[in-house]
Length: 76
Image (tube, rainbow, N blue to C red; front, side):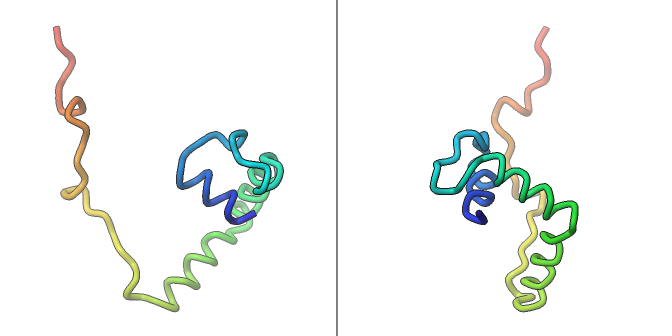
């Protein structure tokens, strides 16, 4: 179940495209939503952060590059 959730989050693919080995796509979606509403994900991330505080990384907007077409304004 976790692998199915992580695959959808990592690839951004529609959950309907999940392989059968991850279980029914509706179950994966329902479980993710139920855990999100119950703050299970926050508890998982907080526990992982407590166990390894040096592993936290932040992304600064100064290192994120935009696509070359994002900088151009509307022409005309």
